[in-house]
Image (cartoon, rainbow, N blue to C red; front, side, top):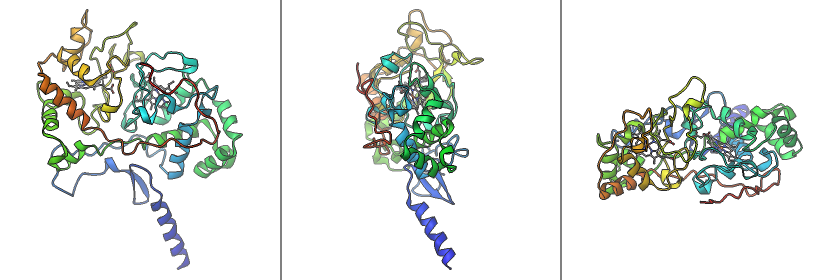
Length: 372
Ligand code: HEC
Ligand code: HEC
């Protein structure tokens, strides 16, 4: 009897601890957005459950791991000179990006690409504009070690974390095995678990798709019709429910200086100039846009596509995706598409910045404010 009561209490405790965007079901945390859309109100054909979230099986979610990951994400101890956190370039207040055209790295060094939003990166089949990493656990070591980003040595990072009792206790609680719990791999695992909570799936569009016809304005509904029309063809590369087909395609965004090979930078991949199709969830809050931050507004992006994207460059971009072709669009229609893109905004699970991180450090440089 006592044993059963103890078990029930343990289950209740586990159920009581919430992970944003997840539900506790049959003894495990399951992403709410990936659950079957069956049942409930009569849904529209647009109600599509999210695909399985990559990597969950190998790195189980627990509330303690997510919290450890959140602290590490905001802690400048991850960078070589303790100046910069992940959040410096993926700031919750700036759409989990940095508001800059191109990232600004270690010591203010300009980076070659725009810092992408981390909203729904958990659902990406590939990470980075060129897809050179797959799982989030595989991605995190890149910025930490990159000399032009956080410029940190993995062994030094482990030593620094071992010197902070709060981290020693938290890693032990999450991974077991005392001091041995602090490894570079476990840093990546905890950060990845936190990133899997940066989810956007309850936008006005999702309520509309679930059968609430009033969730979108008439203008937004017109925008959705255009978005999926044979004329604009946006939905062919930005399909429901993630608004990315997870592929690499050439659309020919103008380059400022040296052309970026994109997917072709990864050995054996291509074509030259192909980039990962971006998610459009929360796109209204993640300007500027594209791999090089070339466009500041959604308005400019729709003009770009209407003109035939890179086909209109001088000289025209090569290898342009066959789906791309010019189309005509009135100002009223353009406003409708933009209004629709605004209906994809759901930042209800925006993470809060810890008041204090275990290292006690405060991110200093570069300043986490837009410079352009
Ligand atoms: C100095 C700025 C900077 C810092 C610090 C930084 N990032 Fe990034 N992040 C970027 C840039 C720029 C890219 C795109 C690089 C590319 O595609 O080649 C990126 C890409 C990513 C992506 C891929 C997203 C996608 O959709 O492809 C993830 C995930 C990510 N960063 C997470 C992190 C984590 C976790 C940390 C901390 C360990 C971190 N970043 C630190 C600038 C930064
Ligand atoms: C042929 C495939 C394709 C089609 C069709 C397409 N897109 Fe894209 N879209 C992409 C790719 C690839 C990127 C990223 C390109 C880059 O960064 O260079 C992108 C990026 C974007 C971005 C920037 C997102 C960000 O966070 O930076 C927006 C907004 C966008 N597309 C909207 C649209 C709209 C609206 C339409 C229809 C008019 C459309 N797209 C049609 C492939 C496509």
